[in-house]
Image (cartoon, rainbow, N blue to C red):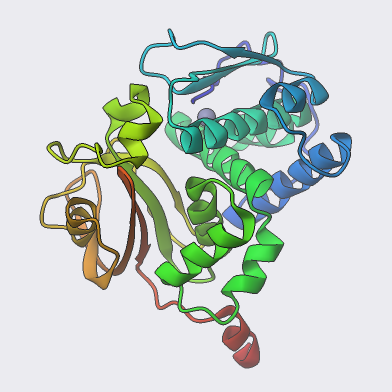
Length: 299
Ligand SMILES: [Zn+2]
């Protein structure tokens, strides 16, 4: 999933800085413009198959189940995307467009150049790229403008997640992360599940065989623009967390809880949880969710 930033990158100090990327929202706007341009290249709508999308955007595609625990990777020297096809469908789809966004960022070069010149801290450099790729994947599958319309009068609850998913029929992961990307308040969207189920069948993930004996971890997450912190992939879901109860009991929840940071710190929040098969989709509201339409009235 990660693309290593190395000194051999073709963008090392070779391009002029075109954009300023000091905020998440500036990065998001740029990524969405790259996705819009890619859609245009593809004729306005996404072709039926991943291979057609990859070919249309000039990147090779390998589907290989032997890439270990990786779920996908992008090699800019090809350029080639490698996807593990044994993942469950939702995750394959989201991962593919995440890697496609790595490709778009590489071709464009401006964000990578900016980070290399202005952000010396490699982990935050990498986090910015990975967050941008999640925003891009969500934008391919669930365009943000339409989600914004649906969210305008919502309470940022499980009904909104169901409504967006029902409207687009796209990946649950893309649905959830796009909601967080447009949220005007501080929140984190998070998908918890079993990492080892990367290699399990569709039935195991979505059917009655979903295993409940091991604690789930963060598979995907996205912080809203105003959220200062994030949930790292692999962070364990504590057994006293409301989302754990949602996951164990197969129920949707909306109650007071906390954000379970990897460091062990707990930040109070409102927890919205939706259990789907072997995963639980969470919206962790650290700030007060004000409907977008209402916010405009007072701004
Ligand atoms: Zn990545």
